Image (cartoon, rainbow, N blue to C red; front, top):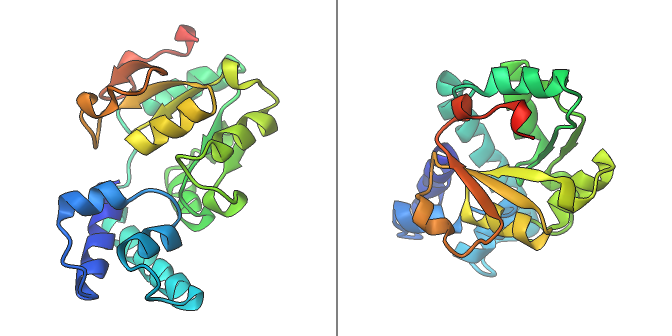
Length: 198
């Protein structure tokens, strides 16, 4: 997420937004055109927003590629969960272009039964559509789902979907999630997680 924030921050300020990095972090949720519209209401056409979004994604991938790696413990967790026949899905506010960049760059696509991207929903997080679509395609009820999230808007989305949530504290502090009663655990990485926990 910090790479997304940094890429947007550079683009927005180059356009005259004069926005701080912290404020940009707060605005980085939902689809790219929504981010642009929040910072510059009514300024850009849909075509211009699409072009800006693509440029931002290219910058993000270029900046992030040298650091692309799994969170500590995640590979073991995925292997164990897959071996235990636990259904795994991705519900992301990212576009398919970025999801493919990560899944294929890390060779982990094989572990996931369902992938729901920003391209697959009308309403982005914190609306619950992403997580509800993911659960529907996994053929499980929302009550049976546990969402792993790293942002307050993501936790809010899971709450709106009536799903429990585990927070990975790699970009936000625990205190930022105080209002989300669905949060059941905080983790720094996956070393403390086991598929047997579920």
